[in-house]
Length: 108
Image 1 (cartoon, rainbow, N blue to C red):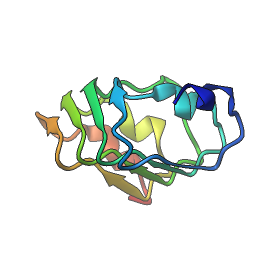
Image 2 (image 1 turned 30 degrees about the vertical axis):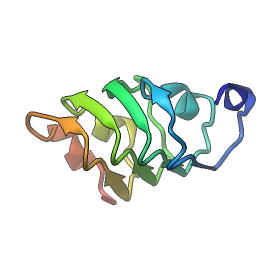
Image 3 (image 1 turned 90 degrees about the horizontal axis):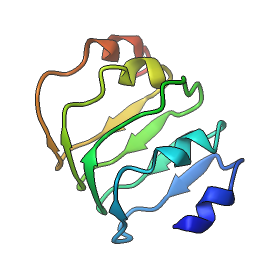
Image 4 (image 1 turned 180 degrees about the vertical axis):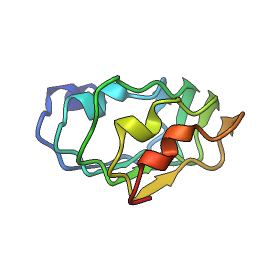
């Protein structure tokens, strides 16, 4: 939803089961530097999971399950989300190996 582009201090975003479409909204993370929870499961996001090159020190839960994302998990995912406790990405179309940077997610 476009109104979320104007939000810049959210700690939780829960938009599961909302029939959202389009590419993964990286801007939700970029615009909310204190974000701890991002739940986007069971929508219709498509394309590749592309992440901003900066680090998010606060995100602890990322649930992108049951979308239509494809390709490989980004090589930098472990560097971008070092504090992640939960990464839920089942029921997509990801392929390839798990990136080595996952080892930097010490809380996973």
